Amino acid sequence: MARPLIQLALDTLDIPQTLKLASLTAPYIDIFEIGTPSIKYNGIALVKEFKKRFPNKLLLVDLKTMDAGEYEATPFFAAGADITTVLGVAGLATIKGVINAANKHNAEVQVDLINVPDKAACARESAKAGAQIVGIHTGLDAQAAGQTPFADLQAIAKLGLPVRISVAGGIKASTAQQVVKTGANIIVVGAAIYGAASPADAARAPIYEQVVAAAA
Ligand SMILES: O=C([C@H](O)CO)[C@H](O)[C@H](O)COP(=O)(O)O
Image (cartoon, rainbow, N blue to C red; front, side, top):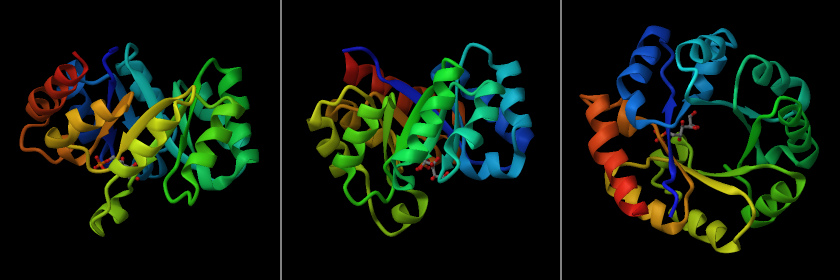
Protein backbone atom coordinates (compact mmCIF):
# COMPACT_ATOMS: atom_id res chain seq x y z
CA MET A 1 0.00 0.00 0.00
CA ALA A 2 1.33 3.47 -0.84
CA ARG A 3 1.92 5.37 2.36
CA PRO A 4 -0.91 7.82 3.04
CA LEU A 5 0.13 11.43 3.25
CA ILE A 6 0.22 13.23 6.57
CA GLN A 7 -1.22 16.72 6.67
CA LEU A 8 -0.60 19.11 9.55
CA ALA A 9 -3.52 21.49 10.14
CA LEU A 10 -2.09 24.79 11.31
CA ASP A 11 -5.01 26.54 12.96
CA THR A 12 -3.01 28.90 15.16
CA LEU A 13 -3.37 32.61 14.35
CA ASP A 14 0.12 33.70 15.32
CA ILE A 15 2.45 33.68 12.28
CA PRO A 16 5.81 33.13 14.03
CA GLN A 17 4.29 30.30 16.06
CA THR A 18 2.78 28.76 12.91
CA LEU A 19 6.08 28.89 11.01
CA LYS A 20 7.96 27.48 14.01
CA LEU A 21 5.52 24.56 14.25
CA ALA A 22 5.97 23.90 10.55
CA SER A 23 9.78 23.91 10.83
CA LEU A 24 9.78 21.62 13.88
CA THR A 25 7.51 19.02 12.33
CA ALA A 26 8.59 19.25 8.67
CA PRO A 27 10.47 15.92 8.52
CA TYR A 28 7.25 14.03 9.32
CA ILE A 29 4.74 16.08 7.34
CA ASP A 30 3.82 15.86 3.64
CA ILE A 31 1.22 18.62 3.43
CA PHE A 32 1.12 21.83 5.41
CA GLU A 33 -2.41 23.12 5.82
CA ILE A 34 -2.99 26.78 6.49
CA GLY A 35 -6.17 26.33 8.54
CA THR A 36 -9.34 28.31 8.02
CA PRO A 37 -8.97 30.53 11.11
CA SER A 38 -5.38 31.31 10.10
CA ILE A 39 -6.03 32.10 6.44
CA LYS A 40 -8.92 34.40 7.41
CA TYR A 41 -6.78 36.17 9.99
CA ASN A 42 -3.48 36.30 8.12
CA GLY A 43 -4.46 36.32 4.46
CA ILE A 44 -2.65 35.45 1.26
CA ALA A 45 0.73 36.77 2.43
CA LEU A 46 1.06 33.65 4.57
CA VAL A 47 0.59 31.43 1.50
CA LYS A 48 3.50 33.21 -0.19
CA GLU A 49 5.62 32.90 2.96
CA PHE A 50 4.97 29.15 3.19
CA LYS A 51 5.87 28.61 -0.47
CA LYS A 52 9.10 30.54 0.05
CA ARG A 53 10.11 28.69 3.22
CA PHE A 54 8.86 25.19 2.34
CA PRO A 55 9.10 24.89 -1.46
CA ASN A 56 9.24 21.08 -1.31
CA LYS A 57 6.09 20.59 0.75
CA LEU A 58 2.57 20.46 -0.56
CA LEU A 59 0.50 23.41 0.64
CA LEU A 60 -3.24 23.18 1.29
CA VAL A 61 -5.14 26.37 1.97
CA ASP A 62 -8.31 25.54 3.88
CA LEU A 63 -10.51 28.22 2.33
CA LYS A 64 -13.75 26.23 2.84
CA THR A 65 -15.11 28.19 -0.11
CA MET A 66 -18.91 28.62 -0.02
CA ASP A 67 -19.58 30.82 -3.06
CA ALA A 68 -17.80 32.51 -5.97
CA GLY A 69 -15.61 29.42 -6.31
CA GLU A 70 -13.36 30.35 -9.19
CA TYR A 71 -13.04 33.99 -8.18
CA GLU A 72 -12.15 33.22 -4.56
CA ALA A 73 -9.75 30.32 -5.22
CA THR A 74 -7.81 31.79 -8.16
CA PRO A 75 -5.51 34.18 -6.24
CA PHE A 76 -4.63 31.45 -3.74
CA PHE A 77 -3.59 29.06 -6.50
CA ALA A 78 -1.68 31.90 -8.15
CA ALA A 79 0.12 32.53 -4.83
CA GLY A 80 1.26 28.90 -4.63
CA ALA A 81 -1.48 26.78 -3.05
CA ASP A 82 -1.30 23.20 -4.30
CA ILE A 83 -4.77 22.41 -2.96
CA THR A 84 -7.67 24.54 -1.75
CA THR A 85 -10.87 23.37 -0.11
CA VAL A 86 -14.45 24.03 -1.15
CA LEU A 87 -17.48 23.08 0.90
CA GLY A 88 -19.67 20.29 -0.40
CA VAL A 89 -22.71 22.16 0.94
CA ALA A 90 -21.84 25.03 -1.44
CA GLY A 91 -23.18 23.00 -4.34
CA LEU A 92 -21.86 21.86 -7.67
CA ALA A 93 -21.60 25.25 -9.39
CA THR A 94 -19.20 26.53 -6.74
CA ILE A 95 -17.27 23.26 -6.65
CA LYS A 96 -16.85 23.39 -10.43
CA GLY A 97 -15.63 26.97 -10.19
CA VAL A 98 -12.82 25.97 -7.83
CA ILE A 99 -11.99 23.02 -10.10
CA ASN A 100 -11.68 25.44 -13.05
CA ALA A 101 -9.32 27.62 -11.05
CA ALA A 102 -7.24 24.62 -9.97
CA ASN A 103 -7.01 23.25 -13.50
CA LYS A 104 -5.65 26.58 -14.73
CA HIS A 105 -2.86 26.38 -12.14
CA ASN A 106 -2.06 22.66 -12.30
CA ALA A 107 -3.40 22.36 -8.76
CA GLU A 108 -5.99 20.28 -6.91
CA VAL A 109 -9.32 20.65 -5.17
CA GLN A 110 -10.58 19.07 -1.99
CA VAL A 111 -14.33 18.98 -1.47
CA ASP A 112 -15.00 19.12 2.27
CA LEU A 113 -18.02 16.99 3.19
CA ILE A 114 -18.48 18.73 6.55
CA ASN A 115 -22.22 18.94 7.37
CA VAL A 116 -23.24 17.58 3.95
CA PRO A 117 -26.45 15.59 4.50
CA ASP A 118 -25.89 13.05 1.68
CA LYS A 119 -22.13 12.60 1.69
CA ALA A 120 -22.09 9.69 -0.77
CA ALA A 121 -24.01 11.67 -3.41
CA CYS A 122 -21.81 14.73 -2.93
CA ALA A 123 -18.63 12.63 -3.13
CA ARG A 124 -19.86 10.97 -6.34
CA GLU A 125 -20.79 14.29 -7.97
CA SER A 126 -17.51 15.88 -6.89
CA ALA A 127 -15.49 13.02 -8.37
CA LYS A 128 -17.47 13.24 -11.59
CA ALA A 129 -16.87 17.00 -11.77
CA GLY A 130 -13.12 16.43 -11.49
CA ALA A 131 -12.27 17.02 -7.84
CA GLN A 132 -9.19 15.07 -6.83
CA ILE A 133 -9.87 14.78 -3.09
CA VAL A 134 -12.95 14.47 -0.87
CA GLY A 135 -12.59 15.36 2.77
CA ILE A 136 -14.35 13.45 5.55
CA HIS A 137 -14.39 16.04 8.26
CA THR A 138 -15.76 16.31 11.77
CA GLY A 139 -15.18 19.95 12.61
CA LEU A 140 -13.94 21.28 15.94
CA ASP A 141 -17.44 22.22 17.13
CA ALA A 142 -18.87 18.81 16.22
CA GLN A 143 -15.90 17.14 17.96
CA ALA A 144 -16.74 19.13 21.09
CA ALA A 145 -20.22 17.57 20.90
CA GLY A 146 -18.67 14.09 20.80
CA GLN A 147 -18.77 13.34 17.05
CA THR A 148 -16.05 11.50 15.12
CA PRO A 149 -15.33 10.98 11.38
CA PHE A 150 -14.89 7.19 11.45
CA ALA A 151 -18.31 5.95 10.29
CA ASP A 152 -18.40 8.47 7.43
CA LEU A 153 -14.88 7.48 6.37
CA GLN A 154 -15.89 3.83 6.21
CA ALA A 155 -19.01 4.62 4.15
CA ILE A 156 -17.16 6.79 1.61
CA ALA A 157 -14.18 4.44 1.33
CA LYS A 158 -16.55 1.60 0.42
CA LEU A 159 -17.76 3.53 -2.65
CA GLY A 160 -14.41 3.05 -4.40
CA LEU A 161 -14.59 6.44 -6.13
CA PRO A 162 -11.70 7.70 -8.28
CA VAL A 163 -10.71 10.31 -5.69
CA ARG A 164 -8.30 10.40 -2.78
CA ILE A 165 -9.92 10.47 0.63
CA SER A 166 -8.78 12.84 3.31
CA VAL A 167 -9.91 12.44 6.92
CA ALA A 168 -9.92 15.13 9.59
CA GLY A 169 -11.46 15.55 12.98
CA GLY A 170 -9.51 14.86 16.12
CA ILE A 171 -7.20 12.23 14.57
CA LYS A 172 -4.49 11.24 17.03
CA ALA A 173 -1.92 8.50 17.61
CA SER A 174 -4.48 5.99 18.82
CA THR A 175 -6.67 6.41 15.73
CA ALA A 176 -4.05 6.95 12.98
CA GLN A 177 -3.70 3.23 12.15
CA GLN A 178 -7.47 2.72 12.12
CA VAL A 179 -8.10 5.49 9.57
CA VAL A 180 -5.28 4.26 7.32
CA LYS A 181 -6.71 0.74 7.36
CA THR A 182 -10.20 2.06 6.63
CA GLY A 183 -8.93 3.65 3.43
CA ALA A 184 -7.84 7.22 4.10
CA ASN A 185 -5.20 8.52 1.68
CA ILE A 186 -4.55 11.75 3.57
CA ILE A 187 -4.49 11.88 7.37
CA VAL A 188 -5.09 15.37 8.74
CA VAL A 189 -3.85 16.09 12.23
CA GLY A 190 -4.19 19.40 14.02
CA ALA A 191 -4.56 19.63 17.78
CA ALA A 192 -2.84 16.29 18.48
CA ILE A 193 0.36 17.83 17.10
CA TYR A 194 0.12 21.58 17.67
CA GLY A 195 -1.34 21.06 21.16
CA ALA A 196 1.36 18.61 22.26
CA ALA A 197 4.15 19.57 24.65
CA SER A 198 6.60 18.60 21.90
CA PRO A 199 4.96 18.95 18.46
CA ALA A 200 7.96 17.34 16.70
CA ASP A 201 7.82 14.28 18.97
CA ALA A 202 4.05 14.06 18.53
CA ALA A 203 4.35 14.27 14.74
CA ARG A 204 7.09 11.65 14.59
CA ALA A 205 6.46 8.86 17.04
CA PRO A 206 2.71 8.72 17.43
CA ILE A 207 1.55 9.85 14.00
CA TYR A 208 4.24 9.27 11.34
CA GLU A 209 5.33 5.92 12.74
CA GLN A 210 1.72 4.71 13.16
CA VAL A 211 0.85 5.67 9.58
CA VAL A 212 3.98 3.99 8.18
CA ALA A 213 3.24 0.84 10.20
CA ALA A 214 -0.39 0.68 9.08
CA ALA A 215 0.56 1.11 5.43
CA ALA A 216 3.29 -1.57 5.49
O1 LIG B 1 -10.40 22.01 9.45
C1 LIG B 1 -10.34 22.11 10.66
C2 LIG B 1 -11.33 22.88 11.45
O2 LIG B 1 -12.48 23.06 10.67
C3 LIG B 1 -10.81 24.25 11.85
O3 LIG B 1 -10.32 24.95 10.75
C4 LIG B 1 -9.20 21.47 11.40
O4 LIG B 1 -8.02 21.94 10.85
C5 LIG B 1 -9.29 19.94 11.30
O5 LIG B 1 -10.43 19.53 12.03
C6 LIG B 1 -8.05 19.23 11.85
O6 LIG B 1 -7.80 19.60 13.16
P1 LIG B 1 -7.99 18.59 14.41
O7 LIG B 1 -9.41 18.16 14.40
O8 LIG B 1 -7.60 19.40 15.60
O9 LIG B 1 -7.06 17.42 14.19
